[in-house]
Length: 108
Image (cartoon, rainbow, N blue to C red; front, side):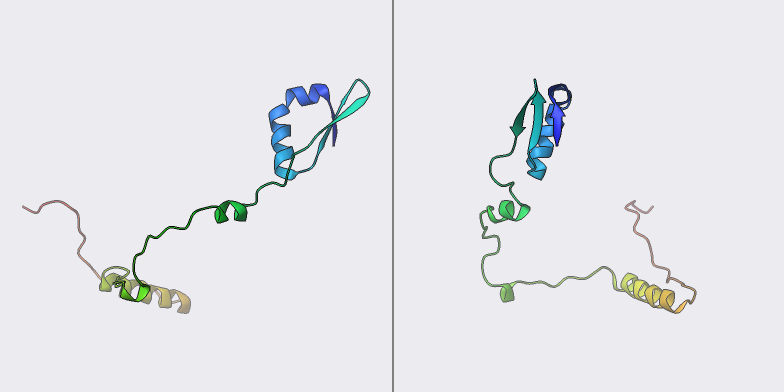
């Protein structure tokens, strides 16, 4: 792509960012002569940046010794969600069980 020096002056930062991101050189025409702006070296890929991260020892021990018991929530709510999903697939109306709500307020 060839531009004039005036266009370069008006949009220099945007054009430099474009050259760095794309790797395509930019030609600038000034007084009948051409100058070339190009990035030196290949742009860093996201994989290069990820591989540069140092490994961490966040889990000490083996995975089998971890206590990984957890649930999606209260069993009644899980049952309601499962029933609603199957009812939606079959086109039936969905009804939910009444469960007490936790409001966080003290009762009088």
